[in-house]
Length: 107
Image (tube, rainbow, N blue to C red; front, top):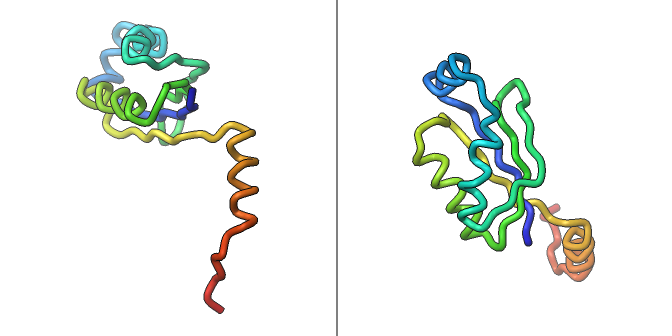
């Protein structure tokens, strides 16, 4: 399974609703992600540009896209970003492939 990093910033309305009735939104969305075929591995609530961050596994990019679309369609986030993460083995394989690259920068 591939790894993905999902980061989102809540709308003002969503933040106000959470302040009024506090809850762990990562746990609240866990069943919805699982229904799509994804599994949350870890998550947290940073402060700054994004309000929630989740690392999850999904079988493919299409599933990851469906996760992002479902959350965006709910209207509780004003912005979000999904980043595909390479495993250590995938990173090493990419480095090895880069060794054979014919690319030469302009000088």
